[in-house]
Image 1: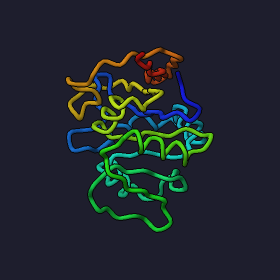
Image 2: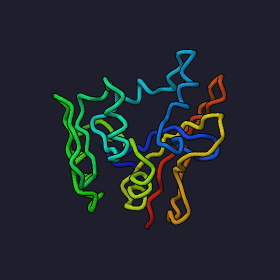
Image 3: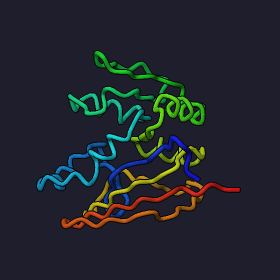
Length: 182
């Protein structure tokens, strides 16, 4: 069952399940933006009211310069002290209670979605905590070594396919509801 304010794990993955290169970079995704296709990203972003982002992903995002989502509250589970860009609404939280972080992010998002940006460890932890409602995954037609999204040790999660879209360049987008137990 999807909550009124869903937490959406929205990301791209290689066909073999990697979401970043071994060094954490995502430059390999630039190969797929040459024809102007944004794979629905603009529409998705318009429906996002708050973000939850892993601390390493946050540090990487700091290097990207201007971000189209800088006007939204961003919750970063971490115990580290990290820089905050001027005017950004960054809320650092202990990563011990992911359910509380998700609840706070939902409240901040209002009637829009919470985007679980990543990285992989946070995505797996939030799935296991039962706070992810939707998995919106773009499978990119590339294989290679990198940081996997899912690894052994993740408890089983049922998914219900809601939609699939195939793009001319071979990218396949899959939209799943995360099934809740009980």
